[in-house]
Length: 113
Image (cartoon, rainbow, N blue to C red; front, side, top):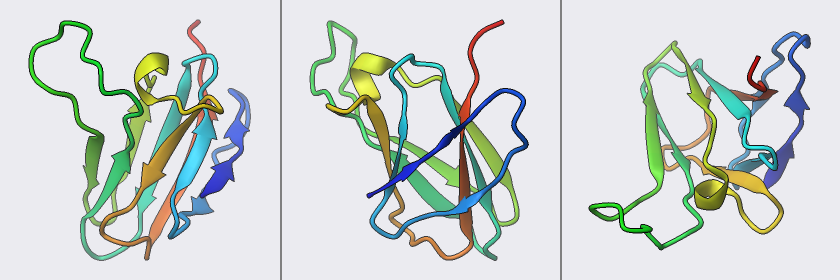
């Protein structure tokens, strides 16, 4: 799994090719965002892996968050709940069940104003 560098508020967004083994990014403060750019000719899914099984009384069962990014589109996923998505290194893990061809990603530090 490759670790993405989180870009600051004033940094220009620079995309990195997604890693076939998955990617992860720091979310210790809970204010991370990820922008996914799908340059492929087909839609691709991105899975944000949930690290906890407990529902804390919420109805239904939780599963990983799956985002489908249409061909040629960008998608921004925002503010991942720490107790739900952070692994033991305070990072959120992403996997790509449809492969990584044409997928680019940027991890962003976006604290509240």
